[in-house]
Image (cartoon, rainbow, N blue to C red; front, side):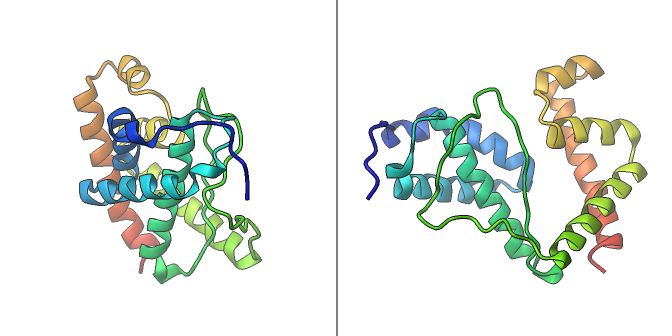
Length: 186
């Protein structure tokens, strides 16, 4: 059993982090109910694995890391048509440092050649579709969802309001989904 000397306080997670986690999830799943479910699953997983919290990252970063895994699991479940491709998310954040374990089981990051091929094909299809949608929408979508730019930075660069940003993101997602439906999910 791991002795945890770093303290976390699950009693304040909902008040402190639920809005941030919701905003993070809704951008990635585009469904309020699914986002809420993923946040609930994140808090539950955090409670189960709190003894593994090393304190090398903030609580928020640790919870975001758990949420990312929940989002990946969500997409794995709904993407069964294409098989079980390994999904990796690379992201940096001003306070993401450290190490954490969601549960006792280690991750398996080994991929087969087939998994790599599927991931490469999917990535190529996504970028091909991004090239086919409104260029301004594509650039804003990439900045927000792929490059993780702050809303304020994007709004200042394009001289738009946060509301306009979310409308553009929604339109880009819709256009991407239609394109991907034609190219990838046939």
